[in-house]
Length: 145
Image (cartoon, rainbow, N blue to C red):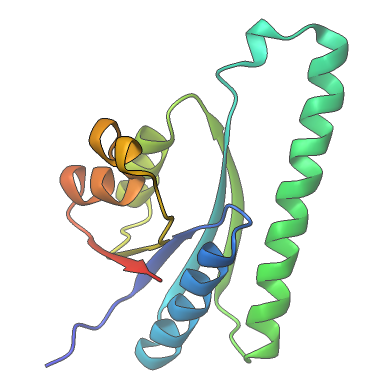
């Protein structure tokens, strides 16, 4: 029997792969009558190192790009007839921690991530967010190519 999901999370970063993961999330959600959460995570850990003037311009640009990416998700969902979409921007210092907390707070049972090609050395020294989510939460994780 196929797993039936109720709450699906997709992290959107503006890449082609993240939109592919979002489209897959919509397909699964339509099949299972689930909610989809599309989130953008903004790492604000460097904000203390920038001057105030640079911070304001930088933050406005980041927020504008984030809203633009979420607007694109809303259009995609609308064009497929999907209505139970929740979009939000999360800001903090640790992407993995924010995702872990979001997953727990919203009873997420499936996390979808777009595949990102990495160089060999990157793979040796870093874990992907999908790996971190798989290791520190109870939800299923799927990587979409």
